[in-house]
Image (cartoon, rainbow, N blue to C red):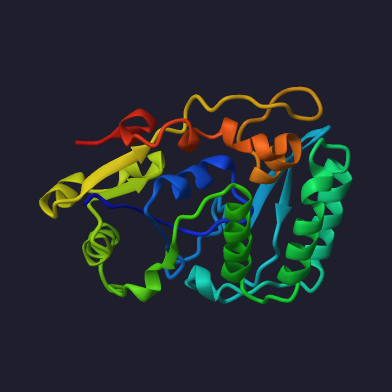
Length: 246
């Protein structure tokens, strides 16, 4: 029986493509026992759309003297960041068509997040609850539970694939530059890449459409119709949704 897994780092209120990856997988493995990078990182920040264009929501973190820390060791460096983020979200989206439907859920989520010290814990809490709103039931696990921490990246991914009985490994397109396809083939694992092009536009507030903002934008604007604007609900056939690397 075929089994497709995704192994990727957690992200803060990520865009719809991230949730497509989860929905296309038979198991989604959060890869947070790897080094945190402050360069163009989505681990602790994301964008929402405002009348002035994209605006960053960033979770302040402790980095001084912690340049080699792992994502699941990153601590939040604020006591009121969640309150500020929710205040901004309410200000921007209060007039969106489905804000009132989801506002109580996210208000509770941000209140729960305000009590957490770990960035990874915040991300995972948000991701799991947003999956519920999108009717995504993919099991979520963690790379640290599989081990193999001392292996190089491709080798570790392959060993996790083997240990989880995966036949297919699905990745974002940016990984094409460093994943070693030959090793996956030798291990009997098919390497697949998500195609992030061609996502349909959806009704947004304000003018010019901005496609890759946080999933919150999609939920607040189109509500239960969010799935209509995601690829993984169009067709579960991976050959239609993905670029296949051979």
